[in-house]
Length: 207
Image (cartoon, rainbow, N blue to C red; front, side, top):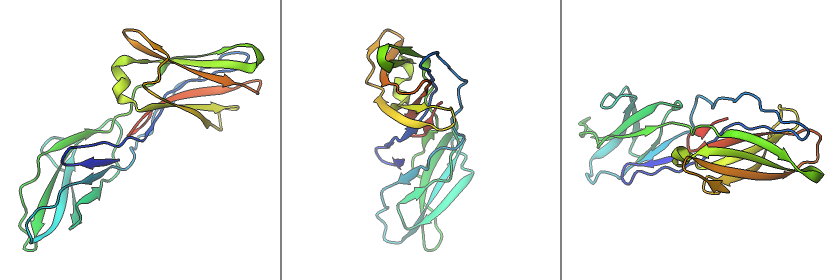
C-alpha cells in the first residue's frame, strides 16, 4: 500500500469472511478472525525546495498530535512504516531537517485506520443435479465501501484451501435496501466440499 501526503491515496490488496458448503449436506464452521498484523504501508511526499535539506523524519502514533514513533529516513522522500495492527488508527506527519540539525515544522497531520471489512453473512450452498451447485452470501450495503472484493476458497478437508474465484463488490446479482446478494456457481466433482468467502481490502481479509 502507498500513501501520498498530497492527494492522499490508498492502493488496496487483501481481505476475508467465512462461508462453507457440502455436496450432500451443508456445513458452516465458525468464522476465523483476520490476522492481527496489516500489510506494509508506504508513505511518499514532495521534496522541500530548500537546497540545504539533509533529510526527513516521519512522525506517527495512535493519538492525534502525539507521535510516539519517529523514523529518520534520510534524504529520500518515501518510507515504509513498521508493522501496523488491525483495528488501530494511526496519525502521521513529516518534517525536514538541515545539516545543522534544525528541523522544520511538521506537515499537516493525516490519519489512516488499519481496518478490515466486516464478514459476509448468510452463506449457504444449494445443490442441483449433476454436481452443479451455487454458493450464496449477502453483504451489508452500508459496508460495501470497506471491501474491495470477495475471494472464494474451496477445500475438501478444511485443512488445505484453494482460491476458487474472485468477485468485485460491485458484482452483486441482486440487492435490496439493506443487502447486496452474491452467487457463485460451482461444478462439484467430490462427494463433499467446503467453501469460505473472504471480503478483502488493503489491510486484510475477514474470515
